[in-house]
Image 1: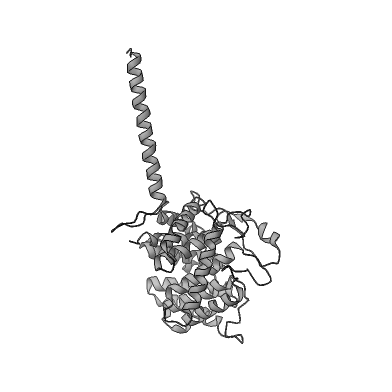
Image 2: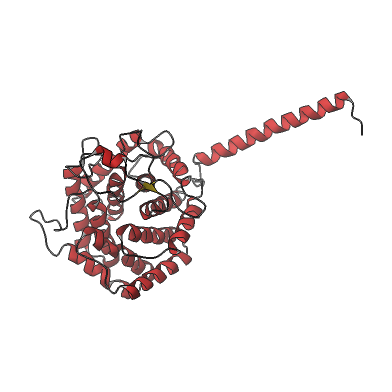
Length: 370
C-alpha cells in the first residue's frame, strides 16, 4: 500500500512521542524503586527484592556440604534468620536436615576456641524456632565452656582481642540468652563487647583488626557492627552496658557513612578507596544500619537512603546461582597493609553468603516500617 509523505511524517512523529513517554515512564519506575515511598500506611519498598535474593542464597547453601566452621555456621544462622523474618517453612527444614546429617558424621563439634564455640548459634536458633529441647544440649555446653575459665578482667579466657571475637563471643552468648532467658548470658555478651570497644575502637569509631594490626579491615569492622547490633536488639535500655554500647555503635555508623563508595559498596580497607569493593563487610554494615533505622537507633533521614543504596549495589554481586561475588577469604591479623590489599576474593565463599543473608533479613524487616 502506498503512503503519502505527509502520512509517513505523521506516523513518525507519533512513534517519536510514544517513545519519549515510554522512556519517562521507565525512568520514573526506576527512581521509585530506588528510594522509599513513605506516607500514611505505605510500606518502604526495597528493590531488588531482599526476600527473593535471600532465598536464592539459602537454596545454594542447602545444596552444599554442611560443616562446623564458623563461616558456615554463621551462614546457617543467616538462613534461619531469613526464615524467621519471612515465615518461610522450607528453609528451617533444610537447616534441620543439615544439622542432623552433620551430627551423624561427627558426634561432637570442636570446642575450646571462639571460632569453634560459635557453632552453638546454629542449634540455639533451631531450638528457638522449633521448641525442641534436643537442640539445647550442645550449644548450652559451648556457651558455658566459653566462660568456664576467666581472665583477670572477667572476660573469657578465649579472648584474643581480635575484632572478630566480638561476634564469635557476643553472638553465642546472646543466642544463649534468647533461648534460655538467663541474664547471665546477656551480661556476658554486653560486657565483652563494651570492653572490646574500649580497647579496639579508634577515635573515628572504626576498629583495628588487632592493636598490632592497625588497619581498618572491612570484614573485621563488619564483625564488630553485626555483634553490637545483635546484642543491642536484646539489651534493655536500663542495662548499665547499654549507653556505652549504643554510643560505640552510633559512632561507628556515622563514620561508615563517610567511607561508603560512590557505588554503594564498602571496601576491603575502609579508608582506602583503591582497595576492592568487598561483599561480606558491605552485607554486615547493611544489616547493622537497616536494623538501626528499624529500631530507631539511627535517624532515617540520614541513613535510610545510604542503606538502600548499599543494598541495591550488594544485590548486584549475587549471581543467578545464589553465590556472592567479591568475598575476601579468611584473613589473619597482620601488621602489613599489603597483606590486606592482596587477600584473594572468591565467589560463593561462606563469609559472603552469611553476610548477605543477614543483610537480606534486615532489609526484609525494613520493608515493614510504616
